[in-house]
Length: 138
Image (cartoon, rainbow, N blue to C red; front, side, top):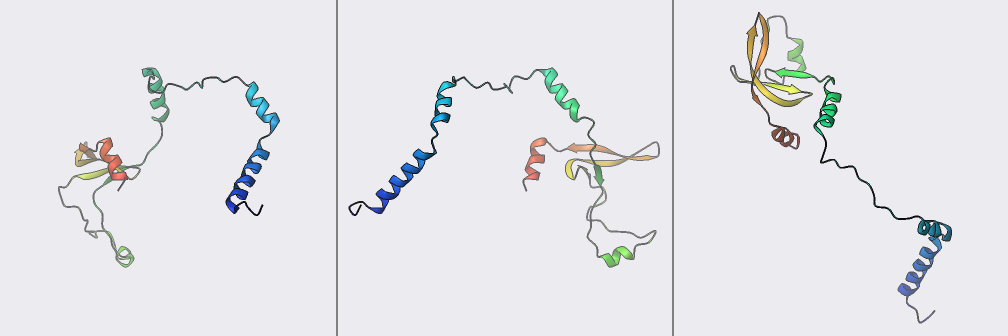
């Protein structure tokens, strides 16, 4: 043992430890099982009916739609001083398009319309899916 280096001894110890882990019964069972080719589902060739059923599953999920006129930051002291008739200055300018958000994610911009004495929003610009993904990664 005096002629052997520490590396040779430790590599022999590792080899012995690895050999102890192999169980003969498990090894024999593995050899007895026939090898078969794994079966994978083909996701690329879905029929139109399948994809329609997939989208139908999510159509009834409620989401929060928000139309944002503008934003501002004010101190709590100023919030407590607000009363009926108070004016809060927003960062957005008059005539600018309003943001339409779904669950906090910008999906479109639009302008205010009045129809039958009710307010609504006419979408003027819809954010593309690639643009939405880009904005999420910011």
